[in-house]
Length: 126
Image (cartoon, rainbow, N blue to C red; front, side, top):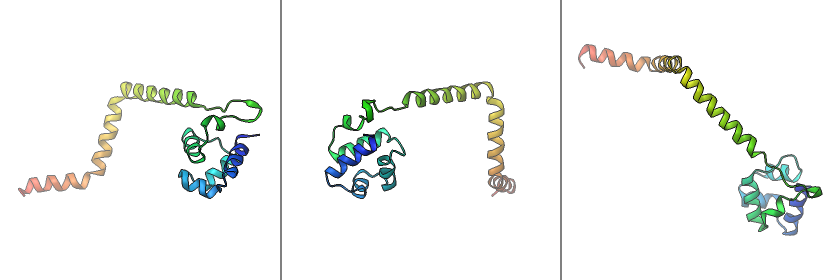
């Protein structure tokens, strides 16, 4: 039995509709439907709130067909984020001057009218 079918079985055994589960968890009805139809894997947050509403041990949710453990791809995402931050850091270290000039030009361009009126007020003595 797949994860979605198991979730549906637990939910229906407690006489809770998808709509009620949606309202009690704060997840959208479509999200609940997609999880039960195995269209998406639920996030850790979704598993947590669904488990709380259904008063079911989280380990019940992580069992899937053929006794395979439920997989989360967190390591890849953390690795990707670390790589992104390292790349951003290197970009700033190696190219800080052109980045500074670009940001300055954007600021001056977007604030031109304010700067101009400030200069004109100062020039005329107001």
